[in-house]
Amino acid sequence: MDIKWTEDLTVGVDSIDDQHKEMIAIINNLLQAINRGDARDEIEKVIAFLKKYVEAHFLMEETLMLRIKYPKDKFLEHERKHTQFWETYNELAATFKKEHRSPILVNTIKNVLVGWFVNHICQTDKAIGVFIKKEGKDTKAYGY
Ligand SMILES: [Fe+2]
Image (cartoon, rainbow, N blue to C red; front, side, top):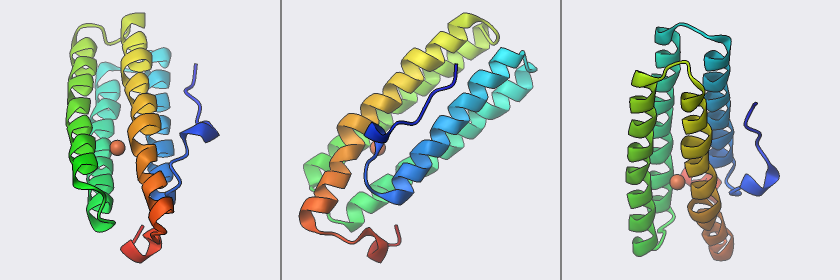
């Protein structure tokens, strides 16, 4: 039932990887809460926490990209993908409003939310790690 972290999700920047692991943990908490049949407001709290966490995470990634002078076009594309995430989040929130205990909600989380993350990490976030390596940047010097 749980979503598992796997090595192929590694971006190569510890702070980004740690936060990605934490996001997977939050999503697992959400799935467990639904599975246990937790009260609606308990599930709502996890969904709200996920929003806050993802907002902070996106900001952290975007700030890092600016600090390491990530190519402008790639930065803008990455930022656009972060903005698109909120459509995915809204889809989850809308499903929750109608289906807070049903398998439809679980499926939305697994297919839409987890699908977005895995796709985004593999296709977009990993490019940051590749750039850092190629340019020989020391992320610790930027506070990461
Ligand atoms: Fe990202």
